[in-house]
Length: 180
Image (cartoon, rainbow, N blue to C red):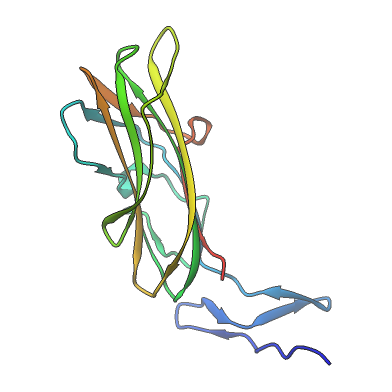
């Protein structure tokens, strides 16, 4: 006795929403919405601001992949095209302009424009040139169609400014994919 699998169906934008495909007799899952965007433009913030800075599309280059084009490269916002379970990950590197000055660094995943998951640290590493932190986080969340996810950052320094480093080598990556 086998399991009956549904046949594939597509929506108007070409996203396969149900079903499986068979390649050489091996069952594979349909294409799922997914993106990987590298932060390619550095961002500088002021010490006195306690408001998180949204990483808008201007901070991202062309996504390495954007299946279904649901990651908006202008706004930096991912919009769920269908109900489902999604996995999001992000890595950022934040540095202060003066060694020993970085007090707090925080990365926020914003779910429907509201801070949802926060990765933060107050114990940063120091080298002879600057005070810096690398933040990494991931989580799984159920989203319904049209709900959104965006990445924001916040850093507090004792004086001076802070900089969000650019480039995947520095940890500047935001990803998301539908997993179920």
